[in-house]
Amino acid sequence: EDQVTQSPEALRLQEGESSSLNCSYTVSGLRGLFWYRQDPGKGPEFLFTLYSAGEEKEKERLKATLTKKESFLHITAPKPEDSATYLCAGDNTDKLIFGTGTRLQVFP
Amino acid sequence: GAVVSQHPSRVICKSGTSVKIECRSLDFQATTMFWYRQFPKQSLMLMATSNEGSKATYEQGVEKDKFLINHASLTLSTLTVTSAHPEDSSFYICSARDVLQSSYNEQFFGPGTRLTVL
Image 1 (cartoon, rainbow over the protein chains, first blue to last red):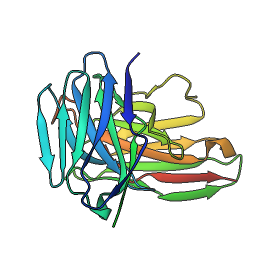
Image 2 (image 1 turned 120 degrees about the vertical axis):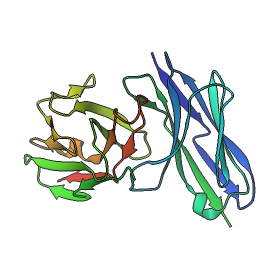
Image 3 (image 1 turned 45 degrees about the vertical axis):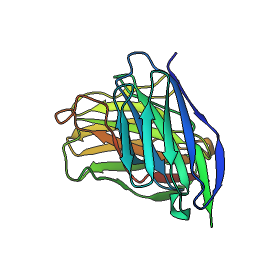
């Protein structure tokens, strides 16, 4: 069965304290690994798509990486506005399989 | 680009009534649209996939007679929750994909609709 697991469930960081979020996946015929940001009461906002192991993508303070078994979302020197839930999802061709997310809080 | 809207953003209804939620792709043609449900502090659960002009494909455990999906045009899909009950209260989110632009499952999400059934 296709599955995506994210850790930790919640993460509290002080402003400027870098860290990484993990997304482990077992998705048959993975065609892409997606990262989304979701603010409370809103729909997910697209961040990155990674298609092959070794690929990296960056956007401002975020960098996503992909291996054959997991993906990491690295947050460098986070700011309070980076507080949100970060979701990853694996594409098995038919649909996206979502993880349960990591709730990130960055406090000043 | 790739903007998806939903209407209404929030709805409160009485038990037993039906509620319709609209999902529109504003600047692209959505050949496929997806409907998700999200409970508090949980992830998105796919309810159904709809392709323009054809019947929706429902995920296991989702009642197709209760959650009616219509994808009549390339920019509009609707979800009707029939005879709603309090347990249907949730956050409903749609997403859209343009298969003509990408063969990958890149989906763009709407802002969601908060349904509360009293």
